[in-house]
Length: 113
Image: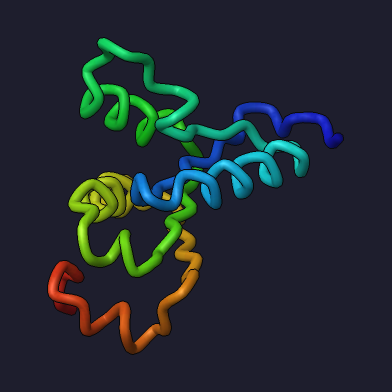
C-alpha cells in the first residue's frame, strides 16, 4: 500500500444504488495513497448530511463522480456536489459506468450547457 499523499483527499460522489462500486473506487484510491471521503463511511447517523458534504467538499482536493443510470436519473446530490467543487475550481473527474457520454448529456436531470 502506498504512503498517503500529505493532505490529498478524494471525494467520491455516487448514487446510493452504486454504493458497492463507490466503495471499490475508494479502496483503490486509498491503495494508491490518497485519503477518501465516501458518505457511507464518513457520515455518521445523526450527522447533518448536507453540512458534512459541504465540509468534505472544502477539505477534499478533487472529486471523482460515478455517473451511472441511477445517478443520472435520481441523484440530485451529485449535481449539488459537482457544483460545490466547480465553484471552488477543484478538479472533477467523471467516471461513466453503464452510460455513454451521449446518454449522460441527454438526461433530464443533467444541467444543460
